[in-house]
Image (tube, rainbow over all chains, first blue to last red; front, side, top):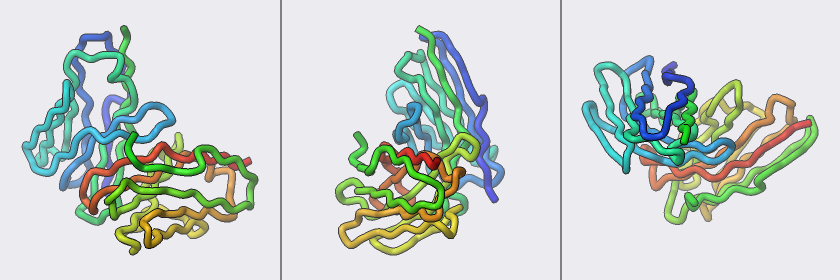
Length: 111
Length: 112
């Protein structure tokens, strides 16, 4: 079965610093979702990437999908305390509709 | 606010009991998904419905069942509860399958 591995598992950065979170799939990716979750709350949709090489941005967050590497990266520029939370990547393996999610990256931003 | 509502917010019950979790999707969304999130297992997909029909089944135990009603709200029934069923249960909805999902605030289930 397909799995999504995220790295790093946790990250502490100073406000204003840039950071990158990676999501690597054990099998070919046919699209990938990024979500943000505040502790104990629901997930907030950030972006959906559907094609290899696709790059999308939302405010200071940019995500890319590299199908050859079976990987997606999420980059935050000039991080702010409001960016703190858990970032999860998700995918629909081979179009089965049985969605899977990564283990999450816990981000803390120090003011 | 995602537009997805879940009730109740918290539920505390005993082992062996049965509970029902309710979800109302965003207006216009036909797909409803159920997930279980726990510290050791992470976010696990349970089941998906599309316009009243079951579309996909994930790691859902036989003790669990769900349905989507004609008005598109959905219920997740958990029976013969065990301590290990304690978790956050999320409902999500989307316009159609393969579209971005919008998550509800979750129901925190505690089984004592």
